[in-house]
Image (cartoon, rainbow, N blue to C red; front, top):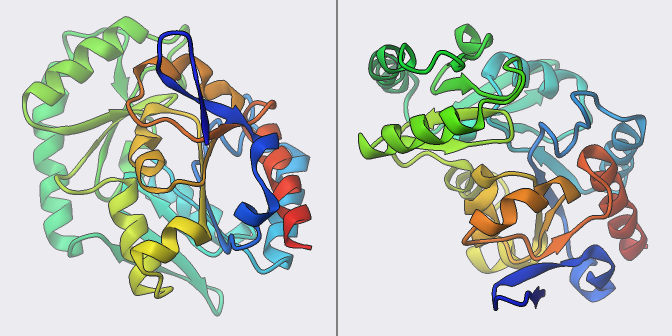
Length: 274
């Protein structure tokens, strides 16, 4: 599914290489949100149209985001999606009869206690990195801690991000970088862990079925656990700068960036389903 660069490292193929045989069995599209469905912080009309068309075709779309629970509650309520995995795998939200239901990776009380402990470890260390700060949505997070390095921090504080990320990992914390944040999740929690839990428990998909019925789309290093587990995986074009540091890369890559790349992929997927 991938080409090999001059240095021998396997690289993603253009999505034109996705075959009808590969795509006709896809019943689930799991996708990152920021810079995968969005483009420059906005949701393009082509992307929203693609989400509606996928829903009408009977394909379950589930955003899998490091975004906060407050933001994901809104997404669950208004977007044509089957649910939202939020806070890097901490919570799964679904809409039923107008209400939104929350399913925590572990029990809610213990996850809130652990989140407070992580915050106690992280906040003092931020004082040594003047460019970095807790995200403005930290108050709306239920399970994780997020640090802004490229959302409201401009220009992006790349060097400070890498330094703090290394320090957090040296402390044994489960810290990963998205395209805009450092997300510190609880031990054992990541995008794939919750995705596997939901796909198996809610939808009854075996590990073998997940490999042929699920397509994943992402744009950043914190999508790596998903690229590793789902063979039918796609990176939108803006993942390109991150490819050299990824051990597990997407199998395919779009021409368009962000939400335009997602819409490009959706068109090919919908054609294959007809």
